[in-house]
Image 1 (cartoon, rainbow, N blue to C red):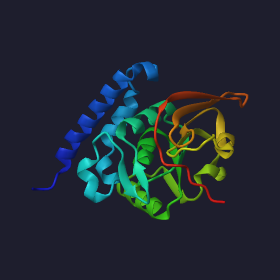
Image 2: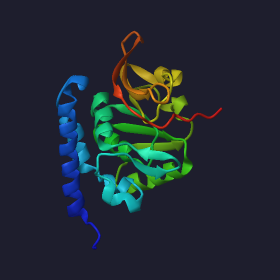
Image 3: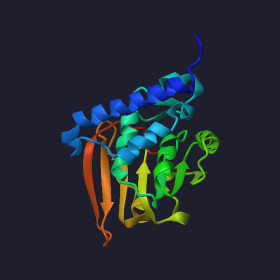
Length: 225
């Protein structure tokens, strides 16, 4: 069997976005709308997801399911990537913090839609893999570092938007502190087996509100003591 080429992947990518649209329509009641931001869907059409998974899994990259990327980590299913990006309500000038770089797929989506992205990954090998992939794809508005994502990246705070690709029992205080008034934070919150994807907003006075979206299952947010 001959290997898949860019034309094949482009067709699969369009199908992926169509499937995301079906999911959004079916879950309209939970989401409060039936259509995700067209800018997010356009970004997903542009970003070659198959280049952000281990090479042996490239042919599976556009299926709507999570895939292993090593070190007991996964790349989230496309619908969840789209939904979390949509919930951020990114603007072109936004400065974004990402916790959990993985191999850089979500990072690439953020880089397509925001001005600057800072991403923290606790696994050095994944951070190196993400940096290589993002550089090869031509993204110049991303900076990655290895570290404890629950502590954020204070040097570049405050952030307009924060996205966390791992679950914690509670919202990390450091991340809330680094979120700009008027900003948004999206992350799964709750214990194992009871995680809920949550949208957190901070008003101009610094008061925080949390809106629960839907049940999810993510790996746990690792911390360094």
